[in-house]
Image (cartoon, rainbow, N blue to C red; front, side, top):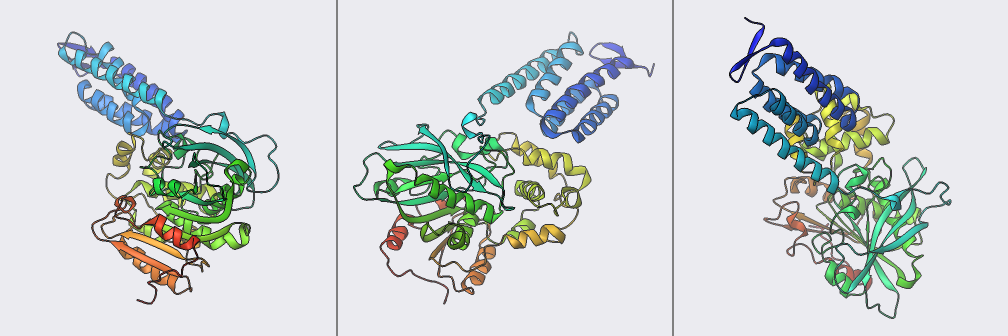
Length: 476
C-alpha cells in the first residue's frame, strides 16, 4: 500500500499528492516570476515538488508557507496554505487550522500590498527632458508629515549618472511658513540606506521630513533655513540607484540645490551646507569633493557626516552577512559593466539575493528573506574586495581633499559602521589636508548618533555661515 498516503483519517492515492505538488508549484512559479525573475521558477517549483513527496502533508503545508514567504511573497504563502487546508485536509481540526491560517496570511499580505507606497506619475521623467543638470522639471505642494508652521513641496529635477547620461531625481523641500526678509541659506539632508527599488524613496514614506526623519530639523527651520531632502536617483524615479556610489549620489544633492533656485518665492541663498547619515554620509563627503568642479555656483560652506559609509571596501567585508551586501552587489553590477553579479554571488544564493535587493529596509518581509540567505554564512563566492568589484569599491571611498570644513560624528557602539573603521578613514582624510572635526559618542549606535546627544548640527552650521574658524581634530 505504498501508493496510499495517510491524510487525516483517510488514505489518499499518491497521485493526489502529485496534483497538490503541481498546484503549489504553479503558485510558487507565479510568485517567483513576478518577484524575482525567471531563475526563481525552477527553484520554487522543484523545492515544492520535493517537499510534498517526501514529508506528510501537514508538515508540507508549513514548509510551503515558509518557502513561499522566503522566496516569493506572503500572498503566495497564504494562498497556498489556504488551498491546501481547504482542499486536502478533510474533516480534521488540521483542515480548519490550515485554512484559517492561510486566510489570515493572505488577508494580511493583501493589506500590505494595497497599502505599500508606490511612485505615482509625479516621478516619471518627461519624454524630452531639457538639457543640463539641476533643472527643475515640476513641483507641487506636499503636506504628508510636514511639521507645523512650515510648508513643503516635492520637486522633480534633472541630474546625471556616472557615465554622463541624463536622468531625473526627486526631493522634498521644506521651509518655515514665516519667511525672513533676506535670502535663506540651504541645508541638504542626505538620508541613510532605504533600499534600491523606486518604492523605497523616503518621499513616499508617511513622514519623510518629520523631526524623526531629519536630525535638528526644527531648529534649522526656526533659523530660517531651507531644508532639501533628496531621494537620490532610482528611489521614486527609474533606476538604477547608486547605493554607496558616492559621485552619483552627490551629483543629485548638488542638482537639488540648483533646482530649488527656480522656486523664487523661497528666496534661497547661495550659501549651502550638506548633512548626511550612513549612506548619506558617504554622499555628503563626496559632495564636498565634487562640488567645485560639478556645481561651482553652489557656495558650499561645510559638510557634516554622521556615521558615514566611508571606507566602502572594509564595510563590504564587514557586511558579509547583512542586507547591505545584497544592496551593494546589485547596485554595483547594475552601474558598472565590469562588475558581474554571478562572478561574486554563490549560485545557491543568487535568486534570493536579487529578491532581497528588491526589498526596502522597512519592508516587514526583509527579515524573512535575510534568514533565507544567511543560513550558513555570507553570500560571496568571490571576496568583494577582489577584482573589478574591489576596484570599484575603492573608487567610491571619499578620501580626496575637501575644501570646506568637515564634521564627522560617530557612535562608539555602532556595529553597522564600526568606529574602528571610521577612525582609520578620518586619519586618511586628515592626511589630504581636509579640516576634519571628528567627534565620537560612547554608547551611541548607528541610529543613536542621530539623537539629541549627537553633534549640534545647527550650531556647527551657523558657525560655518558666520565664517568662524573651524575646529580640527586632525593634529591629535
